[in-house]
Image (cartoon, rainbow, N blue to C red; front, side, top):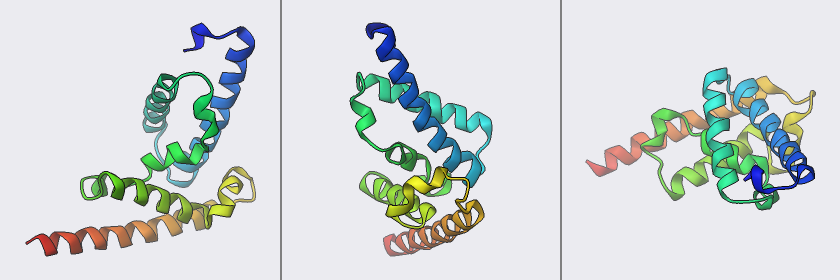
Length: 139
């Protein structure tokens, strides 16, 4: 997509993407302690997905919308699919931030990373119990 844009638009595109990447880094590496390798895979996949949408249109969406997809732990991904996975991702993002109104504060230096991580882990344990309960109902 970048090849079809003017140099000015390319620069703007890269600046927008850099903001997304800073937010994702804060959430996925600083809070959730992902490896650089896993983060790079997430960024590459997200960049490809976003660029396939064309132009700057995807920058109307908040960065957290795309990061939410990566928040559901691997052990829960089989249990929560489709709408459940989307809802769980958003719920995890809200929990991570402390509240929807605090999403933008995640990138602030004063944001309490440890408290965020603990809230996230607590909700993951709850989601695991829900998944276990669902499995017992299916038997």
